[in-house]
Image (tube, rainbow, N blue to C red; front, top):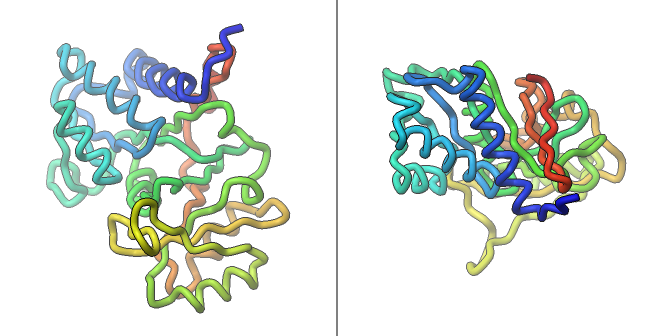
Length: 242
């Protein structure tokens, strides 16, 4: 028994995912790929850069979900494009990202790093979506343990909070670290984090939340079911949906 740490599991899941996808031809030269944000996604970005550096992959065009990932791509030699670029034309072959939770049906909560809006734009405009995660992220149901992030317009905080509370959520405005006041996203908005006492119907709730005026986007990802690579402390990687 290896007893891998959470950090080691993240790296294992990410690198195994990229290596497997390259072997199966789902990551290929000339492709358009979405690259996610956070401590599990970045090892995948790093592994991708190694394939580019050694010539295994060529002419890969990346669309990123955050300033963090854009900076990593600059450091590691991965060309970054906008969805508006004609070479991307608003569509990706594949997107790879982490998840804060993934349930048995492939529904996810994302946005712990406050990049959920760009992450969803990337994930929902990709032909294939891939999630990499450590074993702690695999859950039976969503909504009660990891707080669901919701990106909101700052001016709408009070009415949005009231609407969320009517849906049974406990709502907390996310505060910044090493700064005074709320977290401000890459898009200039704020984040509220929501928990429910009982599990939610995530597929229905995704649409309900986005119907609230002042909500920009929420961290439920249910509409593009992912291929999932989940690493466990014993050193094995569970693959779902491939």
